[in-house]
Length: 443
Image (cartoon, rainbow, N blue to C red):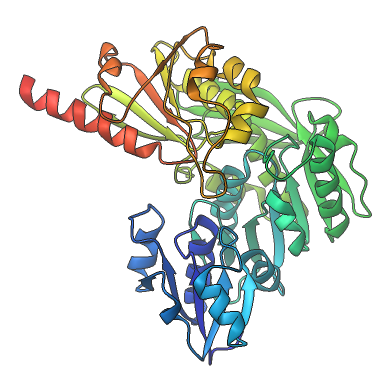
């Protein structure tokens, strides 16, 4: 790193960008950034670190900067354009991540789903045992002196993860997502095959995924799951309202019992991947056991709070597989309560491509409510609407507006899950305000 420069992040409030900025700040570098002025959940950590956040403007760019450009912004963005015209060093986010992980034992967590939760769990566990740098896709980033490990989320979107070459890779699954970029599921698999080719020491892959089973690599591939065909196998699984516990077998050898205060079968798989990595890095498994028990989750993944007797869960789920996993987790923790889902479809292309799968997963709830489709900066319109999805849903399907969340008042002492990757939280806040207002009137 060049400490004579100031690292300027274009789009510093992005989840990966804010995490990267925090790591550089922790390493003693000078850091600043620019973004929209609207408040986002990622900026709190930046503010606490004293990192300057500026409104977007070409005037932010001057000599002495090294620019890190967020992947949401094209080269036509005024700041990026000016930086290139001035001859400043400009890195794309994923390019710079490839530089940052060098010199550490790096572990890249990839997969269509489960990246953030698994990265967060691995970062928590390893940080409790050895100095660990980590970059998590919920905006959390940490840099520590003399780090042994670097744990990071490896995002397959536009093949960005191929800018990194980790020592170890965790692969949670291969699924068809990002239809705005990938042509087919085979195209996605091809990207993961290239990532496998770039991994230096070992790969840990979910054994139930047949496409992961088809990958070839010059390094060993270890599978984790619930079956005898898995190298790391969870047996004697117990799922309760306080979490999950299981024994881990490695090639038939019992490594002992592990427990996590997490819900849903997917979190058992995530925990297995963490145990597997730790085992090969010869970390004390008793330390792993202790750290697993204290994990509290990551931002926007099954975040819970209670208001006026209702349990409200906030979750980033925006793909059918993720929706299914989130409802499964809620059923485990609240087996006797009704579960309603408020879902905001994310992007028109994804809604069209996965329409039937969305309906199937959402119908696992007791009742489904929809918002209008979130139009991202990449995709502002399309030939599909939430009404099209609602026709395929048998468990409700009413469309909610942010100004009228009253249909949710039919629930009492139950669970409402708000799911989406856009601005679903404005609907959540509207509902919470409604509950709080009614509670005050009653009292």
